[in-house]
Length: 454
Ligand code: SF4
Ligand code: SF4
Ligand code: SF4
Image (cartoon, rainbow, N blue to C red):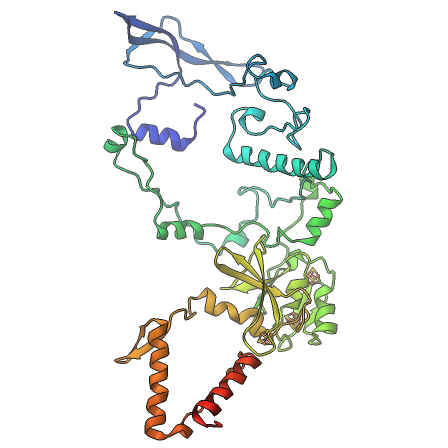
């Protein structure tokens, strides 16, 4: 039966009586009302030319079943208007399957300014296929408005490691096998007697567990790999022939740098990391033989080699794993860890900081950062250590208070100290993260407010 195993299981769970190999032949009525349906039993015959065993009727197997209602659900297809109903139809190509014809790359129907996609283009298919058509059509429309030419979106160079049955399982052995988290459902009695949604949705914990089952099998640099860009530009095709297969797992990923993951399998020996570290960063921390290795004690963790690696052979490490260089949103910002204020390019997913690049050769750092700006900012944000609400210590423990309460407590504290010990007892310590303007205000406040030079 052409249905998903999940759908068959759900139907049987709700006590649906599925009759397999039964072909309806007629509906039987009584007193003007539907009473029963008649069907013929079928059996699988000899294989035909395609090797498929076609069902053939079992003679004399007519069976009737009493029914209240019959719902015809034997397939789906587009319902196109006739050319009388819509004059535009007369100029559109319609296939014998009652779908619009056209170009698969651009979704253009051949008729000026008309594109199609989804079920009306390819017949009954998935939502994902319809979304892909929409994306291709959007690209072609954009190109048409800009150039007057219908163009298809370039086909990205893709390469596959193979199927779950053929790939080397060793790289995935670090993952613990875990069963799929079951979707909670309403009781079956409620499901068969109401139109309530049957699936209740996963809990947050189950959703996290489900995400943890991911094998992270894709390439972490798939969106900005410059090697892939070049292969796409030159229309290189990946030919998945046995004798031409790439041996992906030739070397273990090297885990010798606390901040950086090095996967030698992706290295194309372009030497960018080596040259940048030697001539720009002046650390000379990368030895380039068969593939790059970090020289003990020399790396200052500026992250420059990660930014320059074109293939994702060098990636930022968080929690022991490489951080994916997906198509994250870029936010221009600067580091607040010292007064230099290096320009940074924050890669953000929603409200979450994913990783940090240098600030595109902007002053004052011109592509170079130190370890604190590049790697340490994460800790506060990733691990929820950031303080975003004022707190006052009361009875030995920190209590969250409003900003007004916090400012009032500070003012009272200074006043108390000045009243009891004199203004000279008040001193200030400036933060290296403060700007010149803030530090100027700080000393002004001390001198004018308390006649103190501390
Ligand atoms: S992080 Fe900086 S210092 Fe370390 S190897 Fe890369 S370029 Fe050199
Ligand atoms: S920049 Fe990347 S690809 Fe180039 S040599 Fe270094 S690790 Fe290999
Ligand atoms: S990246 Fe380093 S040098 Fe630059 S502002 Fe931050 S702490 Fe200072």
